[in-house]
Image (tube, rainbow, N blue to C red; front, side, top):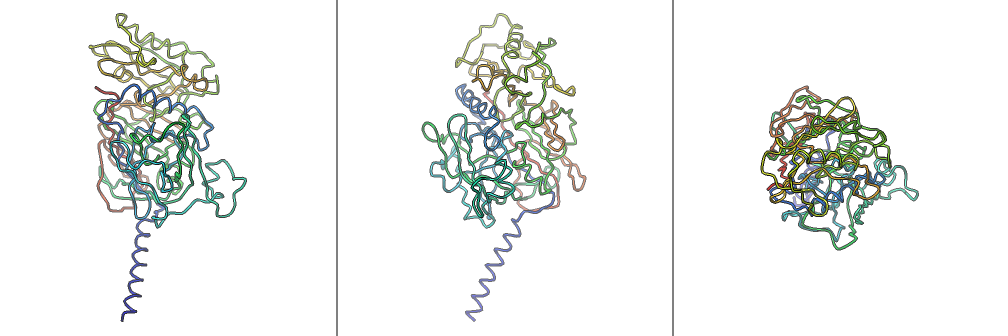
Length: 488
């Protein structure tokens, strides 16, 4: 009888393990998902020192198209938005930077002795341990994923060798480790503003070591890692799409006035947006800019503006705080803007930011700036969007990329400050991007590709649902972004 009891216990253990694997094994059908994405510096009045450091590091990342894995950002110095996701079986929670400038998802791992244990605002950080996950396995150096991210085979790759990675950053720091494949857990859409739990299998980096050129990693802004939403086949959206779980389409809407916003993956039904083609063979979301208007006056742009130094078009990136323009665009643009108020007393802060005191309405006192793009698409940025407050001053959000190092000159990059209050749609299947001005505190309509059902996705939505439903086909991030960049 005792022997039978032992055998039954063993079977029970096997049954439990099998049940766990059944629950957490990826379902290779279309599903819908929601990540609760939050603004990392909500409720804080960040100094200009921070903005300068953040965007300097970001420009160093985005301007270098030869980074080993297509570009990424350090979570302890340049992450703005983060989501709480689950990894492994059973799942553990991780706070990950969401980054459209990154192709690779990676998380700090158990081997990392220098990684902080506590992050921004005291968040408890978790080191990922593949040995504690029933579904984790290392990615071999001859796997299709490894060949994809490294542009070909390793010269010394042998059977059962792990695929390694090394990320190098503009500030002299680096992160190294190896790739693993495991299950990622997220909330999926099951109806209007309703969610259940879903999962999918992805390959991601396991960071085993970090090097900082000076000092140690900064724990004050640290996160567990990065979720990459870049253009390459190694990004999270591309990996999930390759298994038929999602469409390679996503959108974000950042509410720059009330806080909050939406980040959705799927076909956006409403509102409609006009689109412009992405420039091919570029590692980031580059588009052709054809003109700039300040109010009703058009700036004269040199015809070779986007052929100098290999710079092609304008980069759209929600990971950069401000907006960077070539000197030949920046100087006449700022001159025309400030000429509307000739009595302003201008102050230079931090040797970089042009600031002034002004108590009247910004939108009444200064002109809108409109960028023109291929296919007739335009983006209008209002004064309350391109000025930002610091203490009792208003500072110009436009920055001169010509003041950066030589390889950043003539760089055009439109960041969070000017992308707020717009629904921006990325269609990677058709290689297009588009936008429209929108109330980002309201809802959008996203199509379920499997059933044809249209679901409402709203701002400020955080799901606590835990049931699995694998029948839906819409991957959506509903975000709670407290978009308070440098508010009083």
